[in-house]
Length: 236
Image (cartoon, rainbow, N blue to C red; front, top):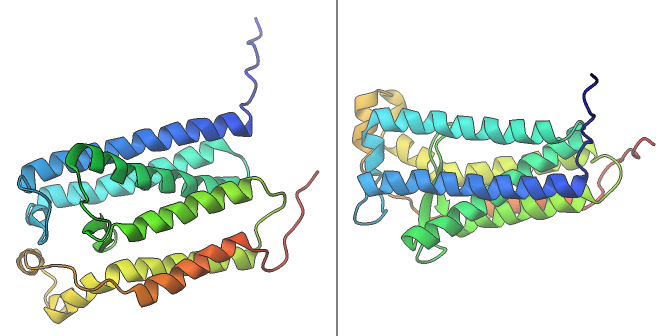
């Protein structure tokens, strides 16, 4: 007997499931952090980073973050056949996930108290830190740009892709430059051993957030809303 054909879901239905997946994923991320903070920061999260002194947990966290990116990439790839919508969906999921991660931390831990509180944002390839408002702003741009281009025909130009990715690099640099400078100031790269790394990381407290790098990066990312370069029309 021939199996019944299951029709493909339309874009609207797919976006609904993408939203639900992203919110659920944000909760799972928050739950993991809630468990870690209950073990390493029972009095409330603060710098320096106690959990980094446990190398087993540190390396598990790095692998968990890599797995998270792989899941987001895989979900985006499964939704669509074309590169443009896969690209947009990756950043859509990332943005919704990140915002709801902070929503759930606020609900269950009442953290952050203010949006200017610093957080550990990522660990790959080195530690990212920044005030909570910064990744939230980036996530809002990701969501808005993805939804904006979902409604537009044609491909995104190579120039637009290039400026967007260049902006992401500046944003990444703004989140990591302080930690990198800290490692250099303590001569970590002349003695990159685990023991020495644990010793100096136990003293790390984020300094001033470099908005002079973050803002130009954000501006470059925002160029995704404008037609720059030659856009190819969608094939009929």
